[in-house]
Structures are given as structure tokens and as C-alpha cells.
Image (cartoon, one colour):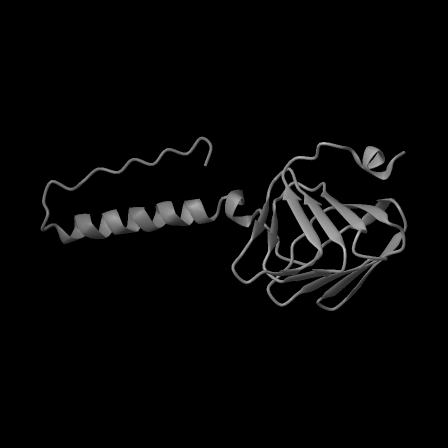
Length: 161
């Protein structure tokens, strides 16, 4: 709402129905302006999008509401444009063993919202500088989970390169 000014002043007559209607109309207009701002539209709820393996070996596949990351190496690093999971969606990491680690860096402009299911037999790291939010409907069944808004190491250091 940059550059927008909204002035509200109370009516001098409390019994003035027109004044009440005008105040209500103004309040609904203010609410409409707030709801139309990009902040409320910034989260796109969809399965993880734009995955690119940047370290290690693995594949990413998606079928309907299921996203599967099949990890072949002990360590895997993936850059995602977004990493959201809707309530009915499922993200499954198939990893070599319980000590395997999948680093998922979200490089887009929005925070991640996890409402659905994430499964992994190993460890999953989610890094999004815009935040990672788990709702009450999220189900996470992994060997280990780190969700952070800051990454101490780059993927090359993480991979030992």
C-alpha cells in the first residue's frame, strides 16, 4: 500500500445511519486493499517446483500429487525454485540409508509452507532464507530434519568439493 493514505474520522452523530454505512464501507474498502496486496499472494501452494540437482547423484520425478526424490549418493544437494507441500501432497525421499543426507536449498523469493507429507529414510535439510512454515496438517516422517532460514555452508562445501 505504498503511497496510499486512508483517513477515517468518526461521525459526530452516533445515530447517523448514513455515517455508520460510510464507516463500514470504508472499513471494507481498507480490508479489500489489504487483501489485494502482494503479501497475501506471495505463497504459492504447490508441490516442490524447479528442482535442480547441483551436487551428488539423484533424480526427481513428479506424478500428480506425489514428488519422489531418488537419491543414489550419500549426500545430495538440490536447488528448488519453491518447496511447498499442500495438505494432500506427498514428497518422498528414497535414500541409500539412514545416514544419507539431502540438502534442499530453496532459491525462490517466497517462504516454504509445508501442509502435507514428507517421508525419508534418511536425513532432510530444508534451507529457505524466506522461512519454512509447518502447519498443523503437516506430517513429517524422516530419519532427521533440519529446517533453517540460513545456510552456514554452500553446497560445494557440504558436498566436500
